[in-house]
Amino acid sequence: MMPDQPGTKLLSQIKERYPDIMVIMATATQDMDTAVETIRHGAYDYITKPFNLDVVIQSVKRALEKRRLECDLQEYKQHLEDKVEEQAKQIRETSLGAMRSLSFALEANDRYTAGHSRRVTEFSLAIGRALHLGKEEIENLRWGSMLHDIGKIAVDPCIINKPRKLTREEYTQVMTHTMVGASIVGTVIANKDIIGIIEHHHDRYDGNGLNQNLRGENIPFLARIVSVADAYDAMTSVRPYRSALSRETALAEINNGTGKQFDPTVAKAFVKLAPADLVPQKKTILVVDDEPSIRMLAKSMLSSDYTVIEATNGQEAVEITQREAPSVILMDILMPKKDGLQACHEIKSNPATRSIPIIMLTAIDQELNRKLSAELGADQYIAKPFNPQEMLDVINKLLQEHK
Ligand SMILES: [Fe+2]
Image (tube, rainbow, N blue to C red):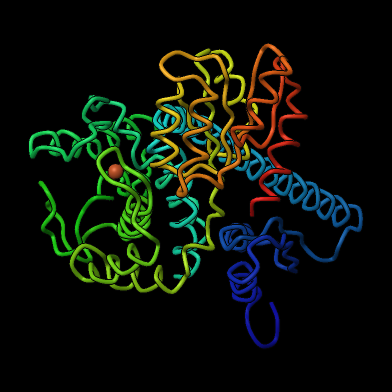
């Protein structure tokens, strides 16, 4: 009992504001009902006056011990929750990572789409940051954009690589990759944002896309971001049936499509970003050799720093050089159809391709070959088996000189 208010009322107020505090009630009353009442209000213990010091000490000790155990339990629970969450994250990232590798491997096999998902991810994340998305949305945007085309695994590669415009039927088949991709990823994770990106990244803002059932703001926002990034990268990349559009033309197309194909907020943010600066374009190296193992070796050596494209004979090399204008050409000498010396001569005789540096490769370090190569305009000559570091140094030096 206290002058202003009963102790039980104060006890209720303390427990309400500071539920973790252990309260021991002290009273002169020997009444059992009062003791029960205080415990009911949250007191830990009840002692009667006059105090027996030993009883007080024992009660305080027990209260402190109980509090310590509660803290330990709380900490253990938190630790367990953190651990479960961390493991769930790891499982999710391992599964998504496996699919990302699959998706990148699919692209790497096709020189027209190599690096597409990587660039779309860079563009999408830049838009997301410009629009101040939260950490979790950015993370989902990263996975969704990396995996957006994974469903193409189920589309006939002959259709994907067709060197002419697709028929309506073929186009319909290609477009199934959105649903297929969403269901592939949906078997591993239940993240609506990531699956929404994959399923809706081809949806048009005005709702006029093929088999589309959402429009405008109803299309998931992250999918509207990937839609712009995807379209820009597709337009600025070479496709089997057309050459790449310039960045200016592609940006003008994005502007024209604002409110029709693209979400206006997203399209405006993207155009403002100067996308040319977002992804440093990898330089392209053309490796020409009829021997698959040499092409594979060169590819594994160079593909972390360069986009590597391949030709299996001199004729192909001349055609690809005219179409793709690689930064450097590595050219074998002895090849079927057209040998390396002839191809070198044609490339160096054409004003459009003459400035592209050519490194001749040969298994036989003959003085004659070396001289002929130099005569025909080749910039360097390397004998096989080549030292990878020597090869990289030569390429980097030539790229510096031909900036
Ligand atoms: Fe796609």
